[in-house]
Length: 256
Image (cartoon, rainbow, N blue to C red; front, side):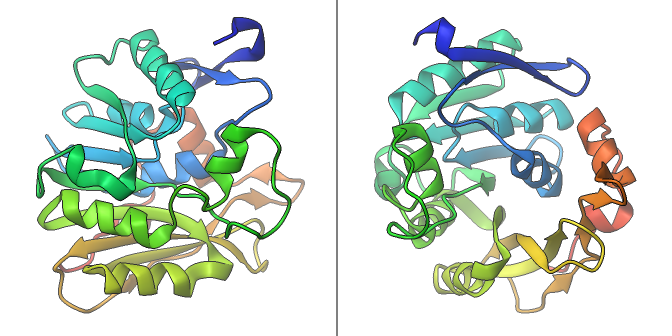
């Protein structure tokens, strides 16, 4: 990695430090929203599929001090950067980043080894939208190496019975996500739509499913990103500050 092609950034008022590619893949607010949505129990063993530069694993380790996280990432340069970010934040004892393909998850882990799985998968179909010439961006944004059903299948393989998987996905592809979850053996239990502004159509969906869960879905109050003047809403501001106490509706759990 060329250090001149990287930036050093911070989250939670400097509590988390991380390096990112200057021109390649860079994390967005989506990662923070997903990390807060994921409802990890104390001492949980969690996996992050498509870990990128490790940002979600870092946030989960920060928010859940007793959790351990394994990140799985297919791009070797991203793996190296994520591993460096883990060392940078002194999380080596709680976060492991491994290189692997979610389509070959059985080569990476035994089945039923995790309590929770999180995933911020590529959002776009292979031939949709503008295809970035940068490999990091291209693989992170488009379903080139794996599609949503592959990530769900890998998550279900990793989860113990009644384990949870949390994902974030474009709202316009909500049906694709929910269909893949149910077909893969993951029953949707908690949903939350994400809106840029009050009254705007939803841009993203946060979804949590339970492996082998009973039918019955809880639809939470909408999550709004901006208020008037393009200022973050109070809930998002609390997330960006690293608050461990969120809105009760945000952490509400449905029956399993």
